[in-house]
Length: 283
Length: 268
Image (cartoon, rainbow over all chains, first blue to last red; front, side):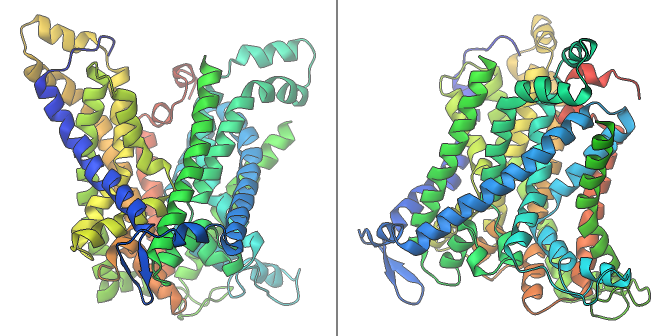
């Protein structure tokens, strides 16, 4: 709609419902979480109102710092792998004929809609010893004994890439469909090979969306809970798993709250960076 | 370049399909262990989904939560998208960000927020808590689809209605709302599918009192594998693929994903 009308009292009343719902069920929980992070933890799972900095101080402990650095590291790696494959893949995809184009998109969307529970389970079977990749290799006579590839660092990385890849493709897709075909045609008329055109024309134009897609994939994998829990040992757990574990099985809600707020700040920082990049490229 | 294109596309398709194929193979195995190559063929584990009371309850609970929370998500998102796009509201960017935020942040944050919130109300471990928490978390999806529909709507349509004497209310009811229905359905479907699949928020809010399908799968896996889990996975995969295939056949999938309108005119 081009012209925006002046709001009336009725408009504000209509807006009050959604904003009220978001305030009560999203902002209030945040405020409670902030308050809880200062509460006193009682051994055995309860907490009482207090004003203590204990939980926040624990964020400076080596265990937490190690978890944070590990999470950032593995998620950056997963984001980098995904974007490195997703960018050329999406570029090829947008230049395919209608039928393969739509078929591949349906496949990508179906993978995106899958529950992490199912992705984690499917990969644990595929990388397991009973009915997985190694069994196929043994069956084909390429390997002597079946073996398990999970739990391991690589299994977590593969799982994270699996959930982030479709997400990457869909963030790159709208921009890459808008890439003017005349630009690549011009490069090729001037004698550049398709390979050279890709590197000297497509990649430089795509740099901001590559960066934005990479950072969004990073935040997305940072939010994964079941993949590291299913496919990794405790030393491969990311912050999401660590937070849930503290909140439920360790029953230390104040510490979990402090960590969740830290994770919020980290994610908001990255999302802010993405918005800034997008704002700059649009001008 | 051509070789690379085929190599990369094949690799991606294999990567996406491989784990799904393995799960499908495991789900039809006759005995209750994982075997490769599979021993015999049996659909017994699929029947188990409905015959076993534990699985049936989990399916019904998940369907109730998904149906109700997606409806609530659309009810929250539609008025918000409409007012923010049709009226001159000073705080519009802030309010829109507030609507996008729950979904942008790692879900564990919303999950923990919901946990402390429902604990504070003293009303914890109820199914309606999951409905509300899912609705807020997934309201971002209908907010995006309806806002897009508002942006692409032809402004001359509501203007024509008003010139012909319709008041703002009649215009909304007879022109704007019907035009928004497809985007509301898309938003509903997206929220529904994701709610059905969601684990961490449901788990933290349920406090072990409500068992949704993903919670049931994770609980069962703690005690070891059963082919029923593989059967559930196959059903989920089939539902997702069917939904999007139908969408591609009857809806405008490429447009929905943000493709350049020019690409839509390309030969079939």
